[in-house]
Amino acid sequence: MRVKWVVALLLLVGGLCSLADITVAPLALKLGVHPGEAGTASVSVRNVGQTVADVRITLHDWWRTPEGKLEVLPPGKLAGSCAPWITYSPTSILLKPGDAATITVHMEVPADAVGDHWALLLVAEYPPPEERPPSEATTGTTRIVVAYAVKLLWIDPVNAAPAGEIREVKVLETSPLKLAIRYANTGNCHTMNTGTVSVKDIFGETVREFPLQAFPTLPGEERVVTVEDPSGEPLPQGFYYVFVTVDFGGDYLVQGGVPLRIPSP
Image (tube, rainbow, N blue to C red; front, side, top):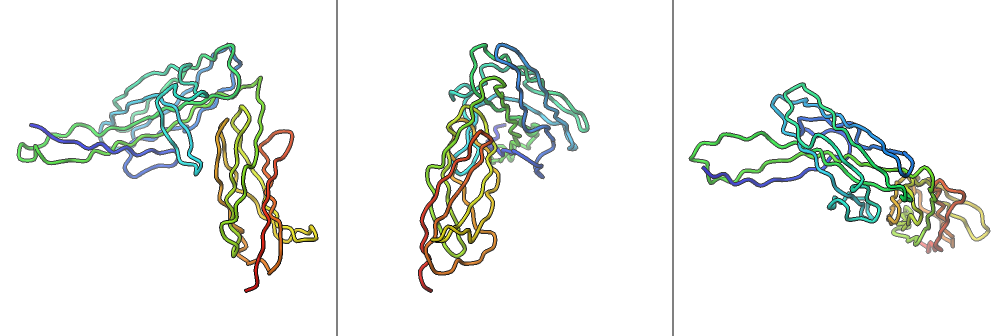
C-alpha cells in the first residue's frame, strides 16, 4: 500500500494553535555565561492532546527579513550563529496524552567569542502514522507538521557594544501621517529599540508627537518599521520636518528625518 503525503510546516513563535497537540515553553532562551564557560537551559514540552505525539527537535540558524518575518536557515550558516556551540537532548520524544518532557540545551562558549550569537530549536509535532484502506492507497493526503520556534540567544556579558543608525525615513501617506523607517543594528549585540516621532513646524515647535512600537534587532540586522500617527488627524497646510528618534539602549540616541509639505486641500 502506497500513500502519498504532503507535509506542511507551520511555525509558531508565540501563543497556541488549534492544530497543535503539544505546548512548548519558553519560546526564548537567553544565556549570559562568560566566554570560555558553559551554560545549560531547558525547554518543557507537554502533550495536551488525546493521542500520542511524535516530537522531533532540530537545530537551525534564524534571521528576520526587513519586514520582521522569521527565516529558518541551516545551522552554522550565519556569522553570528551559536549553533556550533550547542548540544541538546533528546532529539525525539514520544509523548502520551498528558505527559511532559524536558529538552536540555547545553552551550559551550568559545574563549574568543565576541558579541551576541543566536540559534533556533524547532520543536516539531508529527502526526502519528495512520492505517489507510487499500482503496485509498493512491489518494493524496496532507499532513500538518506543527513546529514551535524556540529562539536561543547568547548575550555577551563582557564585550557588548550596542550601536545603531537610521538609514532612511520615508513618508508613505500624509493624511494620516504614515512613515517607513529603515533602521540598522550596527553594533555587536541584540537590542530592543524604542523611540518617538516628532513633527515640527517651520518655527521649531512640536505640533505632533507619537511613539514607535518597540522592535528587536540582531547584530547586523536592518528593519523597515512602519508607523502611523495614532491620532488620525490630518496636519494643516504648511511645511514641516519629521524627526524620528530611536533609543537602542546605548549611551546615545540616533535620529533621522525628512521634510514634509502638506499642500492646500
